[in-house]
Image 1 (cartoon, rainbow, N blue to C red):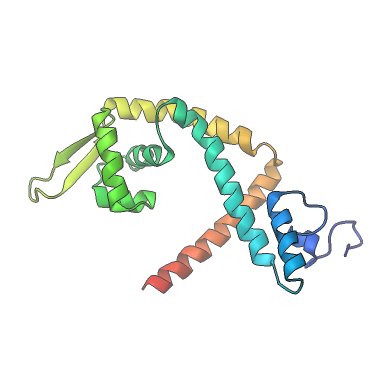
Image 2: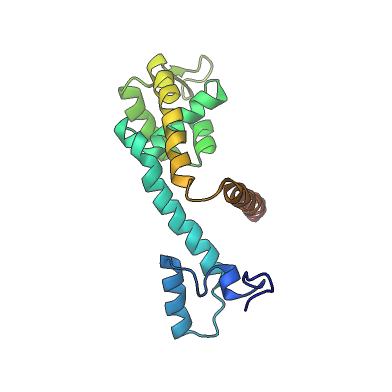
Length: 188
């Protein structure tokens, strides 16, 4: 189904991204499902499958500068949270900032502390509470690595025109905002 401008008509398979003309791994999966269940609406799979596949590929790509620095993405996220907030954080605050479990944060903080990138200070009123901050070495590592990381991510995204990147960012922001609101309401 084609509109008069030569582009797919709204609501067509090609417009949703899963039909003819698309040559990606998700299109192949969708095609297989359509042959097994021809009446199945694969629209959600076409969106969520592509988001998941892109996330996996981008995670591999964006981790290259981090791996060279001897960091995992979750470790860099912890260091980045300490740097961008500009103040000490507790482990539970770090877990919230990085969408991580408390156990995962504890494990990563142990490694980062042993490497001299993070230091811990006990709370004067409650000995169970720790306050964390970057060491000078940790701050220098984040500040040196962030421009390289962003340049690498820019190169990865250069397959899309700048206006396409902006459109995608807007659509993902809308989806994320609505999902966060909906999931928050479901948890309440």
